[in-house]
Length: 215
Ligand SMILES: Cc1cc2nc3c(=O)[nH]c(=O)nc-3n(C[C@H](O)[C@H](O)[C@H](O)COP(=O)(O)O)c2cc1C
Image (cartoon, rainbow, N blue to C red):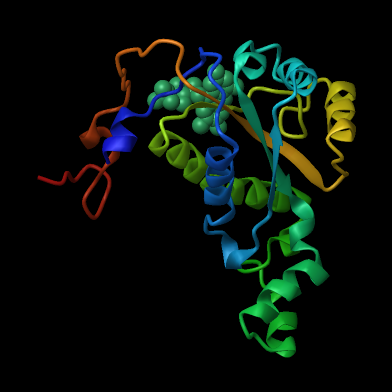
């Protein structure tokens, strides 16, 4: 809770380098996040080169912290993880029998592709969210500050398609992969007081039904 209360988005970083061991620990936290039937529909690309950070900043509507940070984690939503072959591999690992797997793949509550492309996109990005949160918290626990980047050209915003395709090609990404978000990482340039601008507890939390408060 201390980490959660003290974490805030940081957009100004010092020149101090993050050790690779710390970066690996942050990335590993993402890998270990939970996901829908363990689909793990994500890939994480660590970007540290000035050239690629420049390109990612351009992708993110020229946000300066994307190029001024130590490292960027490009968070890729991998819609291909739901493909029959990939998904059954995961279910087999859990010990589920072939006939049951076939059955699961006909059920909208268990297998998003039954509901079409838009649902697959939504569910894939949904899974990535947990991994992003895990990585942010692991960063914070290591004294590394971060900022999630969502404002960018990609298949979700549908802006600047050409630039998005250029960046994807540079990062070796294919059609089924979406850069859904990025995490900028670095040590804070100068500590700023924590500002938690949040809705009140009783505005968003209820007991049994909306309107009834937890005393
Ligand atoms: C999905 C998502 C996308 C975001 N996109 C951006 C962004 O593109 N640029 C940015 O500077 N901050 C971005 N943020 C950070 C939010 O503005 C920030 O988390 C929010 O204002 C709360 O402030 P705090 O993180 O300091 O508590 C994003 C956060 C989330 C969760």
